[in-house]
Amino acid sequence: MAERFNIAADHLGLDNGLRDILRTPDREMTVAIPVKMDDGNMRVFTGYRVQHNFSRGPCKGGIRFAPDVNLDEVRALAAWMTWKCAVVDLPFGGGKGGVICDPSVLSQGELERITRRYTTGILDILGPDRDVPAPDVNTNEQTMAWLMDTYSMHVRRTTTAVVTGKPIVLGGSRGRAEATGRGVMITAREALKKIGMRPNQTTVVVQGSGNVGGIGAMLMQREGHKIVSISDQFSAIYNEKGLDMPDVLAYLKANRKLTGYTKAAHVSAAEQLELPCDVLVPAAVENQITSANAQRITAKVIIEGANGPTTAKADQILESKGVLVVPDILANAGGVTVSYFEWVQDRAGFFWTEEDVNTRLERIMVDAFHGVDAMASKYKTSLRIGAYIVAVGRVAAVYKLRGSYA
Image 1 (cartoon, rainbow, N blue to C red):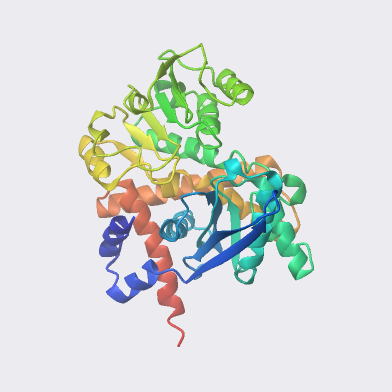
Image 2 (cartoon, helix red, strand yellow):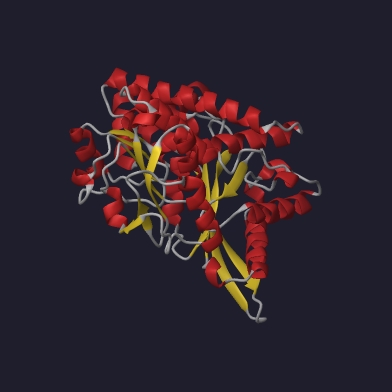
C-alpha cells in the first residue's frame, strides 16, 4: 500500500510534508483488557484502536478478534479504510481495531466480557461523530450489539449510530449483509462493459464463499455469469458447465464446508486461481496472487473482493499481460457504503427499504468505478493507481482547504 500511495502522491505532486500527514495515523490507542474467564481465573488481553484520519469525518472501520492481531497490521488496515472511504466519497476517515485472542477457544460469555471491557477501554475515542466501528474478522452483529449497548450504558442514552453492522432490530440496515458481494457484482459488470463483454459471455472463478464470495457469486449468477468454481478454507470445487449456486450455498450452510460436495470436481486452492475463466474474484484473504502464480492466471478481469489479495510484484505481471484489475479499495467498498447508509439512518431515525439501499449503493459504486476509470485514463495508469489518485487526492484537498491549526 505504501508503494501505491507514493505513486499516487507523485502524480498529484504532493509535497513531503503533506505526504507525512497523510501517512501518519491521527491517533492510536492500546488498552489492557482484564477478563474473568469461565473457570474463574483472570486473563489480560490486549486491544488496539487506530484512527488514521479525521479530516473528512468520523473514523470508520472494523474490529477483529484474532491471535495474530498486531499494531502494525491495525495501522495499515486503518489507512486502507481512509482510502476506501475516500474512493467512494463517503464522509469518513479510516479506523481499525483489534483484540489479540482466539475466539475458537472462547465461550460466548468470555467473548461478551472481552467485547464490553475493550469497548470501555476505548470509550473516550468512540462516538457517532468520532469513530464508528463495524464487524471484521471473527466479529459479527452480536459483537456490535454488545459494543453498542456498552457505549449506550456509559453515555446514559441508546446510541445506535456508534456502530454499524448491527442486527436490524437494533438499528441495522437492510441490505447490509449482501452489500460487499453486491458491490463486487456491480464493479464486475462495469469492468466487463469497459472491455466489451457481457455477463452471459463470461465464466467466473470465486475464491471464498462468505458474505463477499458466496453472496457475490449468487448475485453474479443472477446477472447471467456462469460460476464455474468457488471455494472455502477447506476445499475448492469446479464444474466447467457451471455451478448451481443456490444448491452449493445450501450445501455449505448445512455442512459448514464444501468438502464432500458431489456435483463438482474438487481442486486445490492453488489450482483454483489458475483455472480457465474470464473473471477471477479473490474474496478470501490477502496475498493470494503473487509473483509465483500471476503469470499463470488466465482471467481477463480480476475483481478484488478481499483486502490485499494481489501483491505489488504480481500487479506488475498482471498489468504486463493486459489483465484488468479492479482494486480492493473500490471493488469491496459496497460494505462500507451500506455501513454509511446505516449510520445515516440511525442518526435520522428513519429507515429505508432494501430497494432504496440497493439503488443508492448501485449509484455510488457505478459513479466511483467511472471516476476511477477516468482518473486512470487521465494519468495513463492502472485502475489501482487511478483509485489511489482519486482517494489520496480527495483527502489531500480537504487538508489544503482546512489548513493546519496551530
